[in-house]
Image (cartoon, rainbow, N blue to C red; front, side, top):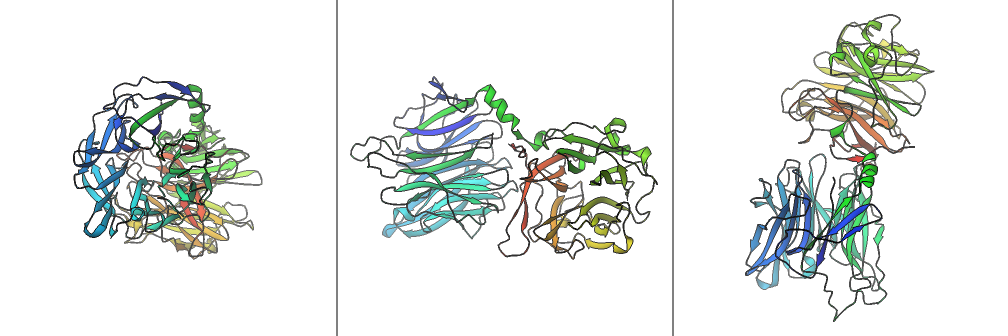
Length: 639
């Protein structure tokens, strides 16, 4: 059962957490909340869920002669908690606070916090140190530092509220409020936080206030940050948000209002501040913040501001859980677990998935699955034996049937699979098959060719992009005949190949001179040729793209390649193609991945969101893939 957590602060301090005896409230959204009676001493609580299912809560608290950053853990969804473990401490009047925890994809746990160190002559050393644990929080050590500078003491010149975000591609980001810039900034790390970018990226400007960011990434790759910002004398601080669609490198200039407090007493001191943001399983965003509206004052002190950590925990009711589950999917639990080289045809509101079977069927033909939502698949459901859409007795070739594209023209369907490392074309009256050849022959007897992918341009011309096996796997293209059954041999043209010293020739074994799995799409007047490089058994197998103003090239590779590559959780992503959601509002990449990080076979289907973003330097828009993922994400938008 998924646990929803909400942190608040209260005005009393108790010594330990043992048992929850609580009031229960069922909210309108189906969450049943239980209020904890026991708390621990401390301030600025932040919580993370670890891979083993336990919860870790970090906080700041006083010790004899100083202050410490500590943590507690719970293995029973917050019912009982461990004794505090110290992460870092000082007795030199440092200002320790704002500790934020995150478990990396590698399993290491990091905690970042603010450390303002008083210096002679009223100077202050403003720092954001990072501590790490490699044994699930039992022991900690100094790891790195995100920010470190000295300045004449002034409270709002400091750095505040650091918060981590790790992207699917492994990049670690740290967002924080920086008094020097009067706003929110971000630094990033390409090596799991060991070193940080020298350049800091401006996220948002805060007219007044600390900023205090909250951060979350959506399934489509968009990063959302909310923050506090001073506005006017009457409304001192409001909560706004900003967006980034390029992994945090640029941010929207318009910052929509999230919340503006309305204090009828007229005695508001800060209105709405210290925001956070999170994404629920059903896709909704929820923002949290503190507000002093409609609060009774006594000598200007807000008694509920500081003291200890109080926990509320909530469990969705069964009906709510079921509803939420139906709206989510995960590549980790894909229904098509034996699938390589996928191609998805969308035809009359139904999706048809063709692939390399990765079972004994690989030597019998090509299976087909069907779906209405791109997530729930039925099959194999082809009209041939064993649910095959294409069966070997109906075409040239006796074994090694590998998936290829299927296109529709005038009510007929054309498949371009590979068999025995040769391209063939077969025809059917139905997307379920049976696909057959009138004349059983390959498109070319020599050289060997694989991975046929067809693109039909706006003027009706059809082109096939394919791989020739000559001195390595290289991408070629040709114009197809009007009946789509053969190539116009005089139009065959080389497109691209892998290059030594680039991502296309990764360091991990096995290594091979490979560029394959070509697929073409058109956007804003440019042609995008996606391809996969490296040996398919290597973790380095990854997807990049090149662009051209013509379907025939020449092709210019994108400098930011690869756009889809391995993570610590996913190996071997490749052979991607693109398809629209049921309502045509979203674009997805369908591709295959290794069975696990320890095993290549059987490869399985994966599906992630993809989109185009404007190129700040001009030229073709940038193709972005939000993957590979294993986390739950909303199903594709329906009609």
